[in-house]
Image 1 (cartoon, rainbow, N blue to C red):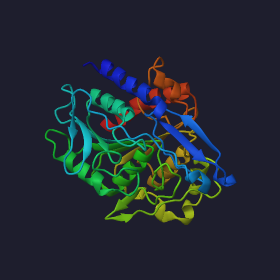
Image 2 (image 1 turned 180 degrees about the vertical axis):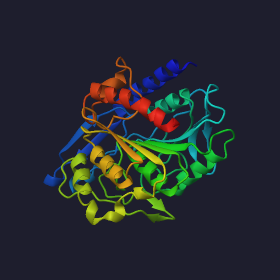
Image 3 (image 1 turned 180 degrees about the horizontal axis):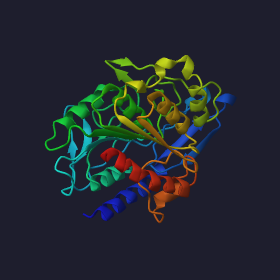
Image 4 (image 1 turned 45 degrees about the vertical axis):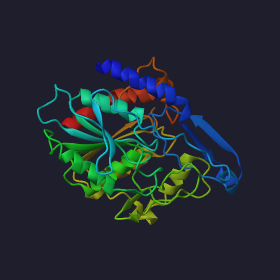
Length: 348
């Protein structure tokens, strides 16, 4: 199957799922059942902190189950050492020892079509890719809550055992909650080559179960939850909860991702119009902490969908790109500008 046909197939999957990926928040500040809904493409990660009143919590919002997509042509399902992933060997045109990307989706869970499109494009540009599920798949946590970081250690160990890859050029790519995970993983693995994040975080945030409850930390190490930032008080939206929570980071430094431990170079891509969480302020915090090894690409008319290959304007998924900030055109132009930079960053 040609790369063009593969891209079209993945875009069709995005369109089919567009109506089932919904975000909802509760207006905790007024303590009522008032809520709002918004439909976005599954390819856009949904860092859905639901700030629920007690009345609204009696009728919790239910997300559809995460998708665990079968590998695209040329890929194989990996179910080894507790891992759930799709593995794509580099194309035959790739270098004899190709670089490898560990690809992480966001709070949509499972192995979604949006990141699958990124995997296809990375393979077409000479990378081998392990597209890893870390919750919402058989044998894994059912929700993004208390996910062991040791799971990612096992994924990297599996990659290193694959014949023919370049062990000096193993990188991690993730968006939204996947970006949070990518930076945490990088802080534990000095051997990594590069880290690329879209709509990133600077802190550990609560887990997500779409009921509005504080579920504790998203991540654990050696069975212990990592310290995390709580959403700010009296927040009236998801963005407000994250923004006011982020303002408390100076008092809760143990919740900051320890990015100063990262030895790899880091690229952070964000949209200044992000309406889900303040990804550009957090990207800039990470850059300041790391220093010259980190670079920020910030786009004024883009939001949470800033990350990934550009979408065909004729595709139905294109219309949803502005659902979490910015315009569809602005997000797609940002993608068109950033994606070649990302590919070069991972290769160099």
